[in-house]
Image (cartoon, rainbow, N blue to C red):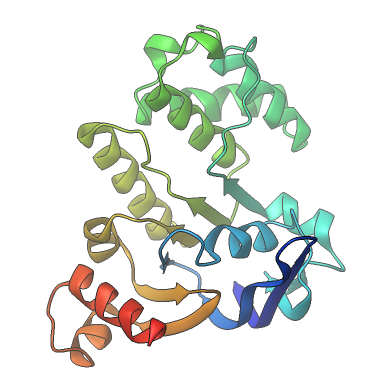
Length: 246
């Protein structure tokens, strides 16, 4: 579903010069799989996700989504993915219902289908109590739920989720995690970025750890534990990051 070969992204800054944000990444995410992307701030996670979502162009490499090259067929790729960004980008004067209706129509959905999908999503994410409240009146957690709803309204086969539980209380975060599990059961391909190691342990079928733009480890949780003296993902993570800096 997602194939990444030699993904490289280089930025040029007037003061700092050449910045290699992502360096020769290679990984695959299959149908019915949650692929965890872990790394500290500045590791290149968000840059990678934005490239996959066709928001920015790669400097080098070939990235395929459902057999489509993300550069050559960007418009077609966008119709098949749902992207949850770390920045909500919600319009303050819209209500959640107006927001979802707008994005459903952008994705070519009929109003009758939009209303049906919206009712299901709002119920599953416990959004019914604030569905008609303007965005500028919503809490951070409510906005995050709305961002998730916006990314899945068109029922995409590929989901790219950048820290989907950020700003959520523990009960709501659990609801979101269970929702992601249901997407996996439906056969969707899911790229999942998080700073919360417990989430990765419980949810991810495959885990890739990147640091300073480089892929420093990849495998199942069992494989990562086998190659480490530690049995805890957080300890394994810090061990690998420290090795990457030496």
